[in-house]
Amino acid sequence: MTKNKSFIEIQFNSPFKIKAAVSTRMGGESGGPYSSFNLGKSSGDDLIPVNKNREAYASWYGANPGKMVFAFQCHGSQIETVGSPGEFTDVDGFMTQTPGLLLNVSIADCFPVWFHDSVTGWIGLTHCGWRGIAKGIHKIQVQKLIETGSKIENIQVVIGPGIRLCHFEVGGEVAECFPLKFIRESETIGKFFVDLPGIIRQDFLDLGIWQKNIEDMDRCTYCEPDVFYSYRRDGGVTGRMMAGIMKIQ
Ligand SMILES: [Zn+2]
Image (cartoon, rainbow, N blue to C red; front, side, top):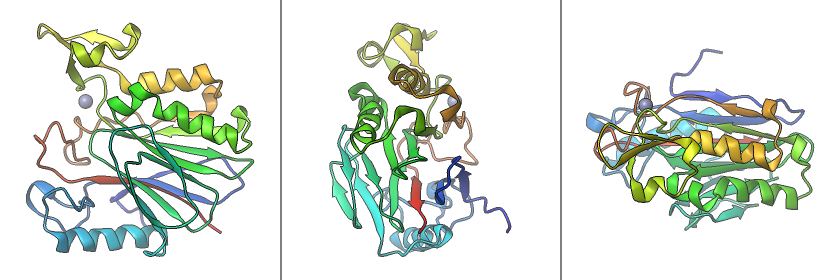
C-alpha cells in the first residue's frame, strides 16, 4: 500500500481494529490559501473542491459517507456519546462503541486528541483549543470513558498536531487560565507563550493514565506551512484539517 500524504495515521496497541488519522493540507483539490486538501465547508473556500476532498477523505477510511459524525464546534466541553451518524451542534467531542461510524473533528491550530480503551473497545475524539482545555474537555472525555466501565490503565491517548509553545502567544487574560509551569514570558511585554499539549499531558498523568499510553505527535501546525493549515499563521484565511477515528467491524 502506498503512503498517502494527505493523512498521518495513528496506531493503537489494541486487539480491536481501529482506523485513526489526522489529515494534512496535501494532495487535495482546493486552490489559493486553501491549497489543497481543505475539508472545511465554512472556511470560505469553493464547495466543489471541498466536497471532492471530503469524498476522498471518507474513501481513505473505507467509511460509508452516510455513516459519518461531524460537529459544529463551539470551544466548549460537551462530549456526545453517539450511536448513529449526524451533525451535532455545540459539541467538541465524540465517543462511540459502534463499528463503522467515523467520528470527526475539524482543526487548524486546536489539538485533536484521540482516545481508545483496548479492553472495552470504546473510542473517542475531542477538539481541544485553549478554551476547551481550560474547561477540561480532555479530562471530561476520560471521565466519560470511566463511566462506560473503562479502567484508567487501559486508556490510550494520542495528542495530535496543533499550535505549540513555540507559537501560541497570548495575552495575560488567556495565560492566567493555566498553571505557571506551562507558561513562558514573551519578549513582547504583556505577552506569554502557553504549552497546551504539555497541559493536556500533565492532566492525563494526574488522572492516572499511564505514561506509556500517552503519545504526543509533537507537531506544530504553525511551524509546518507545507503540511498543515494554521488559522493564526494564515490570518484566518485558511483551510481545515480533519481528525477522525473509526472502529472497523
Ligand atoms: Zn510552532
